[in-house]
Amino acid sequence: MITPLKALRKNRFKTALIFISMSVSIAAIFLISAISGGVVSMYSSMLKTDGDIIVTQKGIADTFFSDINRSVTVEISKMGGVKEVSALILGAAPVDPLPIVGIYGASENRFKSYTLTKGSSPRSGEVMLGSKIYETLKHPETISLSKKEFKVSGVFKSRIGFEDGGVVMNLGDAGEVFHKSSSIFLIALDDLSQSDTIIEQINTANPEMEAKTTDGFIDSYNQFKIIKTSSDVIGAMAFLMGILGIVSMMSMVVNDRKGEFGIMRSIGLSSSTIILKLLSETLIIAVLAYTVALGASLGILEMIEHADKFQGYINGEITFALALKVFIVSVTMALFGTLLPAIYASRIDPMSLIQRGGA
Image 1 (tube, rainbow, N blue to C red):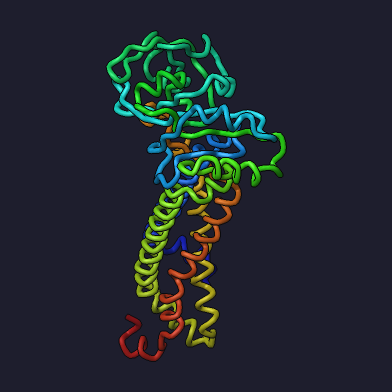
Image 2: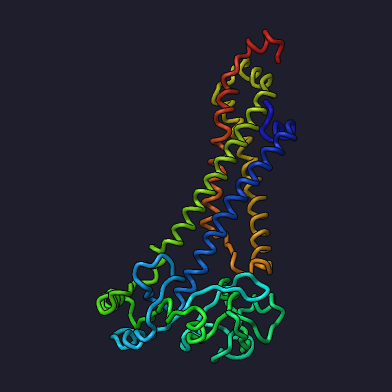
């Protein structure tokens, strides 16, 4: 009996087509999942920096629309168990020649979160740039923002792509640019066990605001849910397209090899043996396609991360959990796509082939 490897070599063209179809589908699932996960991870990391509790305007759909009075930070900082309160304004605006750039207005006590590689923290009329945007803009001394010129006081490095490709200014200047007092408060606690008590105090004293633990906010944030849902839908479509491609190609393979399967049936091999033979052939292709897709995806993500065009905002990481998940999906896709053609092959009647001359 022909072994799976010999069968694959014997049908090289169709094997190559199945391999390419699987590789593209698996790479698509990898990239979609990694990039969507990277966006959520970067924004989550930014919020978690110095923040055990996050405060926003109540009922807003996005933190970019939130506007809360920064003077409340004085009141919150006096609450028992509160270690520090920092305020942030989150916005986006064009910075010539870039069409859109993340702008972060930060209270002075948050500047310590940015690791300076050059210069100093910004004062009034100044900004500091993430290293990525600093390189993209070719080391500018000033930038134009909202029809106003700002001096570049320093450059910082951040592992968070949104920040490394963004502009940081003091809270007062950002308030003038975006016409708001503050977008969010980030509250650091002495003891996390006190978080529920402090959240209740903030929500009771300020009914127009909403305080949550940072983890709770991230879990319930609508934009993250939209990103994850979109990723799941597109990933499912890639999965289904992969199955359809495998079914189509395996049907052609089975049709070309009817004589082989007829002989196997005539010598007494069971239907399950033929099914297992085809499944094992596809499994070999799936493992090879997964390996190639993983390598290609890592290369593409590396290119995206360092591409000036994306300013560091698009980033993705393939974790062990994601790699294992995609491997299981890949094997399932391959085996499920092969199952129907394999069942058809196992039911071929050798007598009908003899009557038709083995065609």
